[in-house]
Every structure is written in structure tokens, then in C-alpha cells.
Image 1 (tube, rainbow, N blue to C red):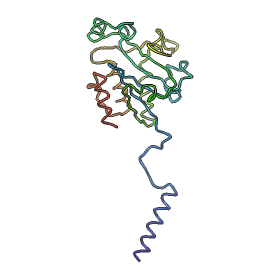
Image 2 (image 1 turned 45 degrees about the horizontal axis):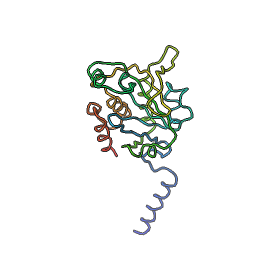
Image 3 (image 1 turned 90 degrees about the vertical axis):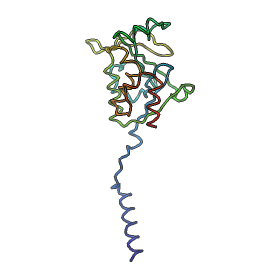
Image 4 (image 1 turned 45 degrees about the vertical axis):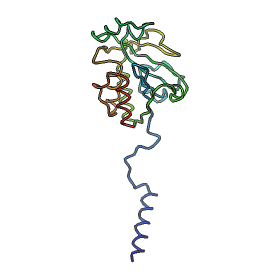
Length: 209
């Protein structure tokens, strides 16, 4: 009787598994999207696969179409775009709400290979989380009445571009806080008010991995 009961339980388990009745809270692998957080000395950038953002980052609809990846950063306009950042520009950015820009850099090499000398963290987001992150980034762009982005000039390296943002930069809304807020909106465990430095951003994210 005991053997028959074990065989019965085993048979039921196999049937449930094969028929797909077994429930799981894990996301199917094909639905998981990777996001990379890159530490550039004093600030962090968010790296996304370009093809995953086509219908989400509408502010970039006509840009970087052939790139595999885009790196997104945000910061004070004058300091970010200056050839040489000065102490005055840094102080002005911190002490007064100032105009800001987004910096988008496009590339084709895998992020972990391209930035193998820099600190980089891979996050795995489900579709809803990914959409929230892209929405946050998209809403940071300043758009014209025709819903076009406002280009301000070539970026800092490679195939890159500066874009005008409608947000204001200040001591409590720095580039790292901006990135942390986006991740927070995507339900990543991070405290933006503690994300003043790039080091702190990475430290918080390491606890999630």
C-alpha cells in the first residue's frame, strides 16, 4: 500500500509538471531585460539595449537606430558640456537650481566588454520594471511643440549627443540621485536620498545582487 501511494504521488507530480499546471513566480527568461549601471568616477550612467527601447524612449525615436546599446547620463548643463569643468561651475551647479542635459552615447560592443576597466553592475528587470525606467528617462527630455527632442551638440565620446532636459539640477538632485530615482521608479531597492555619490549608488545596488 505504501509503495502504491508513493507511485500515485509521483505520477500526479509528473502529470502536473508536464501539463504546465505547476505555478511559478519566476519570470520567463525571455521576458527579463538587462540593464547595466556604469560608474564613471563621479557619476553613473544607465545602459540599455537599444532595440528594447524603440517603443519606450519615444524622445529618441529618430536617433541611434543602428546602435546595439545606449548609455544615458544626466547632469548640470554648463558643467557637463564644459571642455574643462571648473570649481565655479561645480559650485554653481550645486548651490543653485540650474539647467540640465541628458547625455546619450551609442555603441555596439557588449557593455561588460567595452567598460571592462570600469565598475559595472547588471540588473535584471521584468517588463513592467523596464517600462517604468524607460518612462522615467523619456520624461526627462525637453520636447518642442512638435514633440521633437532638443539637440545641443556632440557628446563627450564616440557616437554621442547632448539633449536639453526640462529638469533642474541642484545639490539634492544630482546626476546620481537622478539615476537612483529612475531605478526606484522601476522598483529596484535603492534609496535616492543616499545616492549623492556614484560610489554610494553602486554600493546600494551591490546589495541587490
